[in-house]
Image 1 (cartoon, rainbow, N blue to C red):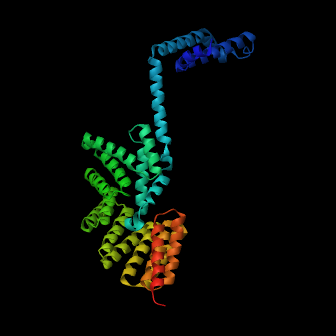
Image 2 (cartoon, rainbow, N blue to C red):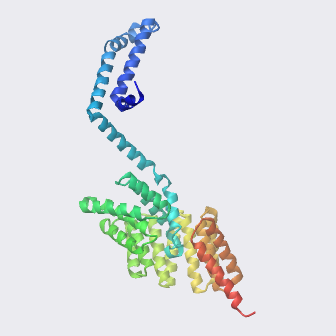
Image 3 (cartoon, one colour):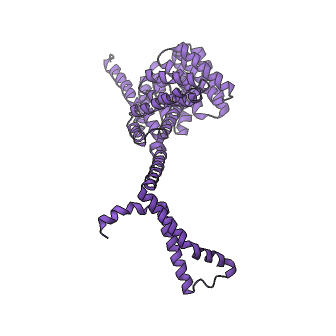
Length: 397
């Protein structure tokens, strides 16, 4: 048989029934030859006689029936198309499960480093990374063509969220259109959409989270992210109201961690308003909750926030003490971004107190850490150092 002829019939030899039939014929032939040669006569009649007799009597015909059925289905096109569809489906599922989602955390952190930490408030770094990670994992499992998902994931690795946002927008719209029974699924998609838009499109993120809390009002994550965005845009009354909603949900469900997050975020609102006594009160409550939970990262963040309050008051000794306590924890935990921010906070505190040499030292340490982790705040630290240098050259000798 020539090669081209074999190529034409080769696909018909891959049907599972054909393959099983060939295997059975092979087993039958080997068994029959062994019986003829006498090699199997040592097996007792009691143990194996019935099985051997049944196999020799019916094995050939069963294998032949399977072969003919397999060829028949293949030549009719039914078997071939069904088998191919099943294989394509399994391949698609496997691709969705093994695609970039296995590195979702790394992609999320890469996206997060594009945010201005000061703008987003360091206290919410962990929650934001968690939201991004969940969004990327959900994207890999979304009900969308594998090709589109792979394209979106590759774009996310480069910091481009548009493809992923389009998929979540479609998922959200589809579930929202179904009705109330799918509201939570739609809300989840809107939260993922909001997490992706959070970094570069405040307006879109606000719209997404507003829809999310409307469709799933008992989800604290949606309310918390909405509050952060409102605080960012200066809508402080709404932000305060939103964080109180998070606190109420946390207390109703006895979620101490979320109580600490909500109380700490209320401190952010008061700090932005320069209501420093209320801000300190909230930060200390959050600190107490985090200490009870043993959340060391939260404790470090609370100390840092208290230090910023004391700096604004001009209580520099207390501010330094708080920032040093935060540094001790963050360095022990290997939290380089928090450590870099604390060096920055110390730099601001020293600058405000007139200790420019120490301020420069702190900004340099912050710069080195931000450069090490590839964080965009390195640019901010360079600007601080440039301003210090310019101030020295322009001041009278």
